[in-house]
Image (cartoon, rainbow, N blue to C red; front, side, top):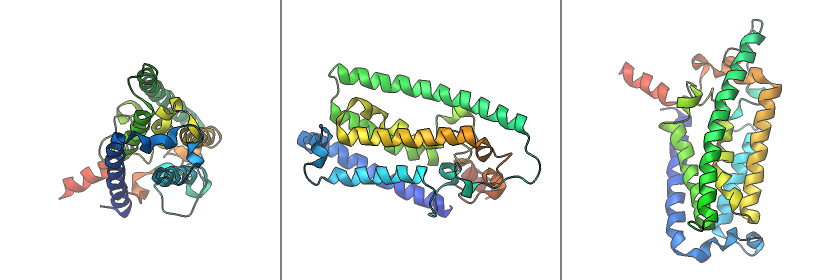
Length: 241
């Protein structure tokens, strides 16, 4: 197992612990008063730490840093781009971006319908702001399950792994989308930051499409993979034993 994959499993364990703790605290409704209005600034709250973790994660998606991060999340930056030596086939590149973008927005529509359903539950008073938050924490766990175990979006995107995934940095926007209905500084600040990370990702695909296609960016090819993060890699290892 690669170092990156081990790190991601550690993160998954940490996220599961966070989910369990947050669920337990649902039985103490006052714990989630920080979600209301500007209560974020009233006093120190343990959820400030989770907010900082989430904000820092998103900052790493919009600013190139030297830390070892998964290439799938960092491929929008010039420092992770390794161009092919031969002439770029721009027709193939254009078709790839066009096709993957069409598939990506199928995912967008499906997710929007799911979020709309959550909104209906909230405005029908079936769930409250605490459960909007819990949906986000649940999606926080599911994010790494998709990376490490099984991703339903691959059925739509048809990408071979997370490194080549067209929607890798959509994770936080999808994760925090239930908080759109929540209001308050805690929720809205996360949603705005997530939207910014998504917007930068989409703009980079528009401006630098060659960074997102393995036929123009050799860093994305299996032969050059250093993350060894995907489940397909693990299957190949098992088949050799």
